[in-house]
Every structure is written in structure tokens, then in C-alpha cells.
Length: 329
Image 1 (cartoon, helix red, strand yellow):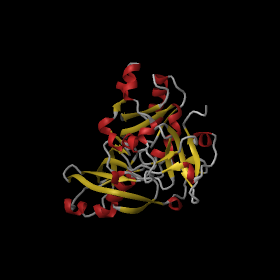
Image 2 (cartoon, helix red, strand yellow):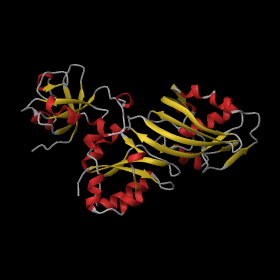
Image 3 (cartoon, rainbow, N blue to C red):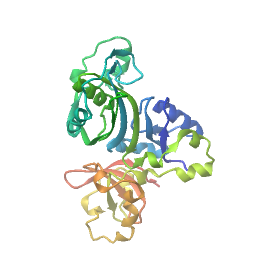
């Protein structure tokens, strides 16, 4: 079986992200296993799990756009902003129309400011906020407000009689969907809490191509090998650079690479024969405008197409090694 890679898991409800990692660690027999983009136990959907040396690429997935489908219930307020919490208030939903709700969509496009829920994993003084909340300790969460980016927001279902509203949102890292649900209820004057959450996309990873956890745990080694993706093929939000032949040892030993030792796609460098191989965004259900590119981190390849790792492009045009994935030997 492959000793490194990425598996696109469709996380079931009731599992923490850590639970998924623990079960896959036992299945794979590998210690180095990690996930990107934590999902709460009530949430389902895309959870990319990396293992082996490809765990070093996890931080690049966090930069990707994430798409969710959420459902909220109007007229109900809980302490956690979702259905798992204690109900604090309930009220009738009257004199509210679908048009009233639709009119709120424009508020959730572009850059918005959010205050993190008190029941969240955001750490203050080294402890997650939810631990303070469970102990009844008051923390100044107002000072922790931050800006997040919403690329797309759309209501997909509104049923006033059932008090249920569903929407889809594509957003940046750190966006609290529970907070959006709660705020919609506040703006309508009746309160709301999130009842369902499904992540349908995380960068190149789509729920359409995700594998149910229980099915993965039952797979043979051959079946597992067939669904494991190489980490290199999935970080398509990193642009590509190519080291000139004979320069690989500089990079693999952590040395700064001067501009004359690497090539870009714009250089006439004879690498067109495998450019199509490197343009692997075509392997996934993602378009160019859906990629949230890093500004200064790149994938680095040898002239024969071997993935060497990642590097940072400095202001002086030189490259600084970041995640060295190639063999130093």
C-alpha cells in the first residue's frame, strides 16, 4: 500500500474530525495522519485526510475556498447556535415572507466581519473558547472579531410553514456558518439556530468524489491504493516552478535558489512536453476562477517532472525552500 497520500473522506454525522483520523490511522497502520478543515460532530461532508509525508501539505488546503450547504430553523435560539445546544428562546414565526429572507442574501457576499461563537475551537490563552463556555467563564469574544471573505451565497430553500431555511455558501477559512444562521434569525427578529451543515467542497475536494468512512475501513489494500491521491496532485492552488537540471541538490539541502537556476511557465525552457501533466486542476471538479492561489508559495519540479516540494518566492526573485518532499539522496 502507498505510504503517503490523501483520501477524500465523506465524514458521517456524530464523528469528530479527530475520530475519523484515529480510525484511519488504525486502518492504514501509519502514525502520521492528519486532516484539514475541522468539522464539528453534527457536520457531514468533505474531510481530506493526509498521511505519511503528505501531512506536510495540510496547511495549503486551509487556504482553499470551502463550500457548505446549511439549514437553519427560525424561531429558536440555542447557546451553541446549533441544534446540539441548550434552547434559550423559542417564538412564533409570523409576518415574515420569503422575500424578507431573500433580501438578506446580499449581506453575505464579499468581506464581512464575524464574532466567533463562544462555543468554538478558537483558542484564547491556549484554550479553545468552548472550554471556557462549558465552565461558565466569560471571555471577551468581541475583541476576537475578524474579517472573512464570502465568494458566493444563495438561499436554496425557504419553507416558512416549517420554519426551515437552507442556503449554500462558499467562503474563506475561519468563516462560522453557525454565526450566519444566528444572524439571519436576529435580522428577521425571531432568532435562528443551525440544524444541518454539510461541506460539499474544500478546494479540489468535492463530496461527489468523497468516500464514506465505513466503506473505506472495509477496503482491501488494493482498493485503498486505488482511491489514494498524491498530495502533489491536490495542491493546485500553488503555482508551478521548475528547477534547471543539476540544481536539485541546492533545493533538497535547504539552500536559497537564485533566479537563474529555475524556470517559470513563461520561460522558453523546453518543459512544454509535461506542462499538461502539471496542470492537474483538470483532474478535479474545479475551475480556474475557483482556485484561491497563494501569493508567494509555489510547487517546485525537476525538469523531468518529479515533484520536489514547495518553496517561497522572495521579493528579490530567489526561492527559499519550504516543504522539501523529494529525496535528498
